[in-house]
Length: 299
Image (tube, rainbow, N blue to C red; front, side, top):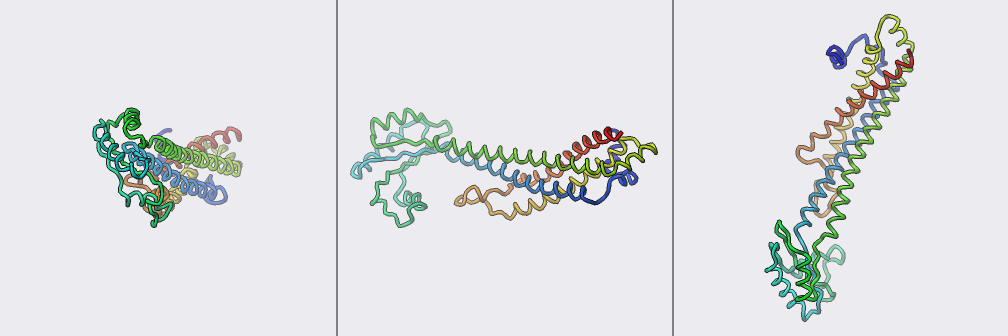
């Protein structure tokens, strides 16, 4: 596009702007569609970013921790616990290991059984917490040692829990990006329909403009500018409103979990402002295609 065309697209042309009706159904449809889609796109973006943070947190928290359960009769539990801790002290890759106290185990079971649970009345196994070094340890070798020396010990390296959780969070993130892409396609479809309607409604005006010497580029540019600005304005309003709604969501909480961590963090607050720009680009391309196609048909 030539420099003069870019200047007209940005600053407008009073005579060319008269070709496109400033208000009406097509204008309202474009502004509403762009605003609604931008509003939803902000939440899709927030969901995607929150899912990424969740996947990273779950992966980091579970990747370097393991648990040993001592399932043994009460008269043997203390001895087997000490034996397991002794094995862990000589296991390469184990940074720290300790047996959980009765109060800690009761706190872990409190969400299901309440705070009045008496652990001595139930066959609750003794738990040993293991913190790994960055290099990790040989889980298979440790299981063999425990099986030989501590028959009541069961090693859980959290792999069966970590992988599905991280995979679920990553799929949520992908779903967020797919949703944002579908919303962008919906904006393109709406703008295309509105541009076709406006061009069809102004067919007689276009014919007169051609008779007085107006080129198809000049006519198309009038429609492109008007619909691009409508999409940008509507998307900006929708994005700002959505950001205000996101800001009102509760902050991240360990107890409440994922549903309280949907807000943007740090520089991510600037990302929603890209949505109006992308909406304008989508509207520009969609209107250009619609205008060129319709003008060829009306020729």
